[in-house]
Image 1 (tube, rainbow, N blue to C red):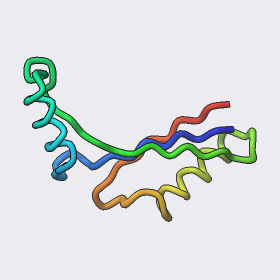
Image 2 (cartoon, rainbow, N blue to C red):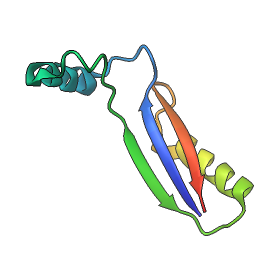
Image 3 (cartoon, rainbow, N blue to C red):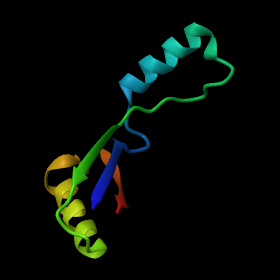
Image 4 (tube, one colour):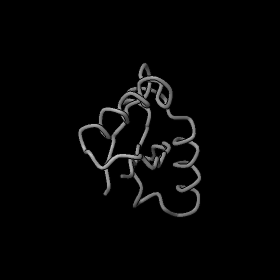
Length: 81
């Protein structure tokens, strides 16, 4: 089973990379089509289980213990068979 983990800054936390990308997109002519940019990261982990509940529990533990700074970041876990 594969766990796809998307991590991004919580709302209200300044995303300086996102702001810089937004500014650059504006200067490249995308001002009318882009209203905001947030930059995050994606981690893809191959898990040695086919049990969805176990996979979810293990992925949450990985996020809470190492992969995500839960003070300033949110995460989403998507499981794929």
